[in-house]
Image 1 (spheres, helix red, strand yellow):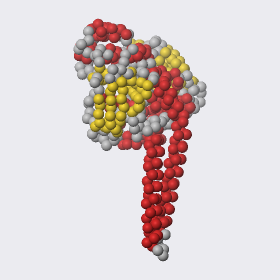
Image 2 (cartoon, helix red, strand yellow; image 1 turned 90 degrees about the vertical axis):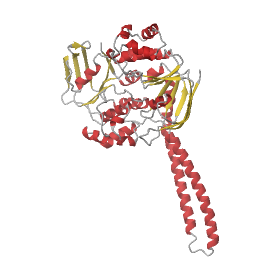
Image 3 (tube, helix red, strand yellow; image 1 turned 135 degrees about the horizontal axis):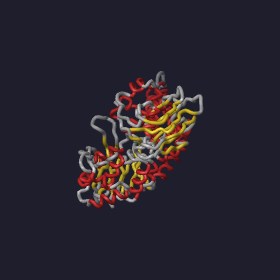
Length: 487
């Protein structure tokens, strides 16, 4: 056991004037199982890189342990999987890899296959099997669940629960709750450490949210009162100064005015310091503002129906026949292992030419808003994107602001956005569209916990008709009114 200490950590990227970290201080125990949470774009992955010594910084990072980063960088994916694992853990025995893979319910035959032939989920589990075989290392695990289906997430969560000495970046609340004993939270101005599981952390956050409006109102009242007092003080000293004009004893009045001016300046300085202190209390608070949506009401009860639908790729069926109906007010979650056709069904609704058998019936004139899983097509400025997609730019940017976009982001090219920020662009676009049916394909990939809460509240308040795919079980259980399992 040892301590990892961060003192006065200050960092910004060479191409930016914005500080990512400004004199940040915290310390963690190398034996802890830490979950790392925070808004998208705040610097979670950057901190992991700093711990590895990837960037220059000011301040001090003190540690007696070596850091390993996940996912490992596999340069030649054509190599045999076992060879890649042996490079990652040169001291590990083959039987140890087999043991770890067995715990993760992964067939040992993957070790003899080229790494590139493994599915995304298999690649993740294979690399995880090597993660804890380097003794004495502290592990920096960055978003391990993005390519994992429900069963795989359960396995990996249970697997991590039996380990220690790691810092885990994940936005899946149930996944975090099952495998961590401390939370490292990245706020606007600081990084804070809290003991306990993720549920206790979220309970504290929810309590904070409940009183947030009242706290803000009190602080803003105090700021207005102090600002008014400062203005009165300034006006009063100005009147005293003006009274010298025409006075019989200008020396006496001038001396008195100077003393009063000095006193007024002192009072004003104290008031301004108090205003600044009150403002700082508002600045670092994490919030989850309410979002809005204006869904359209369809003229009939049935919006969409699937009858014995089977998506096909290369002439092969990917699942058993699927039949279900989406009614007004339904929020349908599609569930199933990777590769069972969930995204394909959504693409059929969005008009993609997916080979399939069976019948997909879409109501006449039905307006659909689609959020794809892929964000690679996003490029250029947000203003151009809004214009190209015929959505109101002011509303679009207002939604992004509520999702924690800084105004400076509006001038950047979307190719420079983080994965979570790109996903927020797609969600914000959908929230600006009036539709009868919202079709969302893994909308929460890379999305931070606070934004997930905002989206859940939105769905529960406005009750739009939806059909979606999402591996975040907490979100799915909260948002869905109906679940369809694909085999």
